[in-house]
Amino acid sequence: MCARRVVSFALDHAKYAQNNDDGGNASSLAPRTGTITVLSDQSDGKSASTAGTQKLLTPTSLVCTRRASAHLLENDRAQKAYRTNAAVCVPITHFPGEKYVAGIQSGGIREFANLRAAPVVVATCDDPIRSEYSYSQTTNKSKGFYRLTPFGWLSLQPNQVRTIANAIKPDVLALPIDDVPPAAGKRRRETAVSRTHAWLTETLDDGELQGDVALLAGLTGGTDEVVRARAAKLTMEAVRASSACSRVVGVTVGGLAHGYPADTTKAMLAASLEAVPESMVRYAPGLGAPDDVLRAVASGVDLFDGAYPLTCASDGYALTFPLTAQAARDATHEVDASASAGVDVGSDASKMNLRAVAYRTDARPLVVGCTCEACSRPYTRAYIHHLLNVHELLGEMLLEVHNAHHYSLFFEEMRRTVDDNSFDDFANAHFAYRSAHA
Ligand SMILES: [Zn+2]
Image 1 (tube, rainbow, N blue to C red):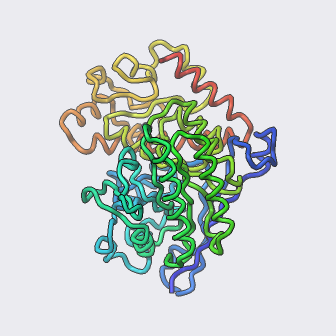
Image 2 (tube, rainbow, N blue to C red):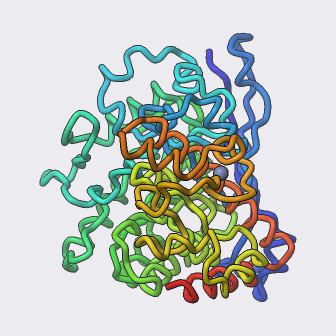
Image 3 (tube, rainbow, N blue to C red):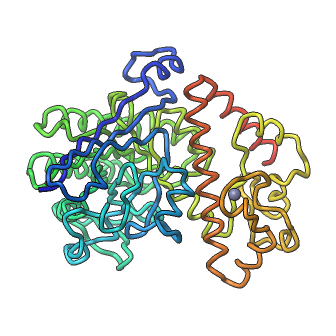
């Protein structure tokens, strides 16, 4: 009736070994590039637009959507701003029940929301924009989980997730995770592990999930490395033991969205990913700032949630951090460069606060030389400052266009430097620039 799909992830082994002294050691965490491929085989002769092979290069950031629509942009413009390597993240919480998916026809969300150009559609059980709430409540009966949705707080049951997924028909479904608050005790962490595990095995075993959606298994455990490592081991055992094993193409590392120090995040990632085969794709929602992304890519993460460029745009910020190692080195010692002007107005030199009065008469584009639709027109900083001041939506839209473009270039550069073995140089130049402007 509907298309058969095969979702697979292929690590670029040659480049990976080159970047990794212990190449071949499954537990090593090194920067890597890969490709997620969605192979559609159209058997009903309809909806030919979704047939064929779509490819997504990793590491990359998903396009964060609201009810399957890019934040303020129509999908065509969003695809352009995100420079085509734009897989879409559709939070399940935006369709929190059967009545919300009633109008979606057999083509799923791809056709319903005109997401045909997206190489991969990923459904998640958390809204990346609201991820700070994701740990806050779980039902006592341990069956469901509360999430803040656009319709208020709602309890979702794992079987509802499957019903919604059956209607949305994403290529990939990130299974629910019982995340734990930073201050959680041992018992709470253990409960989180067993709940997340139960949700995984239930989904793998009950056969309710239709079609051939690929799955990301959830990994939890809070900041406790021992609990995390055990949870990951249990999860991998359950996946291997299941007859639906081939559905699981990767993992979601949960619980990273709470703003932990860099060392803590690194240890959490390492503990969770130790037992995960390198052939699995690794999604780390909750990390989005360039510093965090660079560190996570260094630990072998492939996918990010894409909330960062949007929340920056909503807050009036344009991303301005240097996009190459050379640009970072050139800018490190500049005192009065345009890229560092934000320092004077309460920014951190990786982004620019367009609400600041300093830009009121600034006739330059957001980033000189940027080829995005906003900067190449060019709309000036002064004009965008004015739009934000008078609460004109266009201001935020232009920031979203620029931020999406800038962020996508950042990921392109990371992929390029991983492939030519200069990722460490890029990351080091970035951090030297950041500390020079701290
Ligand atoms: Zn731009």
